[in-house]
Length: 202
Image (cartoon, rainbow, N blue to C red; front, top):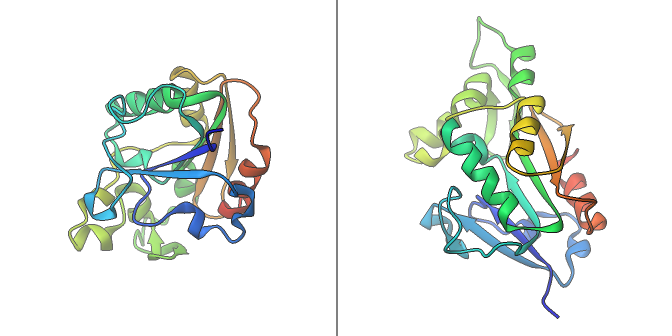
């Protein structure tokens, strides 16, 4: 029997399973890391706008995509989300985490755009970092970190429905971000989804 598979899309350099405080829910699972940056040494080196040569239809039991979709130009977002829908099994779930532009606007201080809104493992994150991308990483030469579009809970849910998902639930995160859980029909793997929600603090 083939092991259930989580595709970590835009994975960065580390395995998601190594980051989970309690990875026991994923015992027997396989994680496939996909990234455009060869420096991350992913399992699959690919642009998320076209995974057709790398990932067959209906291959993913779960998709995890954290702080990635905002790095695409807005006109490419439909193609990215359609690829998510294409590779997902009918009873799977896509978990997408992005910055929350509505949250940024609520916390916006027009007199101090560099004021930290929250602290991340990469350091303090300001409104400028959320809107345009992590400035310290970009200044160090990592242009993959630039942001090219943004979302609110309502806007991402609408775009995921337009991409072919049947249901999208959005949940606010612990900082200026939110998570969307998109499905085609009621999803299996509830224990794994809950473990990811706990990891994200949702």
